Image 1 (cartoon, rainbow, N blue to C red):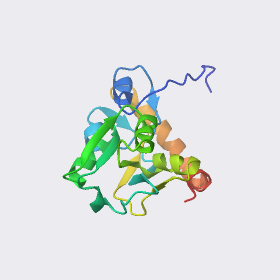
Image 2 (cartoon, rainbow, N blue to C red):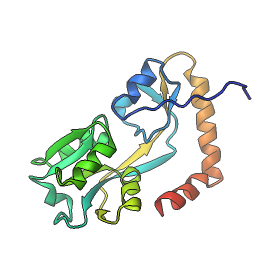
Image 3 (cartoon, helix red, strand yellow):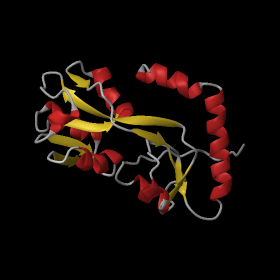
Image 4 (cartoon, helix red, strand yellow):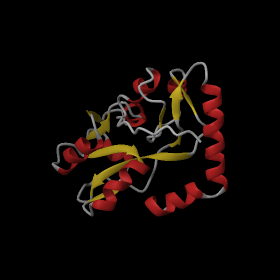
Length: 185
């Protein structure tokens, strides 16, 4: 093991790909969905988990399914797969972008938007802390999460190391236990 210290650097969905590709960070582990478009920019580990696109609403909302979102204001966070997917899933929705999940959640609570869409793993934290919101039961996609890292020379060794670590965590059921602990699934 190396005696180098790990430095944690905050990233946002909007800047994390740039931070990897410019070398500002070595890896990103932050609900980063593996997509063909992103694979053109950065490298990914093998998937370690997956999320599903979900919809968060106020419990007093009349929205009970994705079809109810037509004509409604839906909050997304810039740079996420939810931003990309929502426009193709609900054609007449008013998609409103935010810099952070906290900003989108605040807008939902103030009734500035009607719903938030994102990964169920992300939205579940709001439900844990606030009994006035809920995630609609139906989920709309399965999106694999991976660890992102810079493309180029030297990435083969990093990919092999990350993939071995993920395989070990899966074999020991660590990921399943964490899901049950934090998401109840």
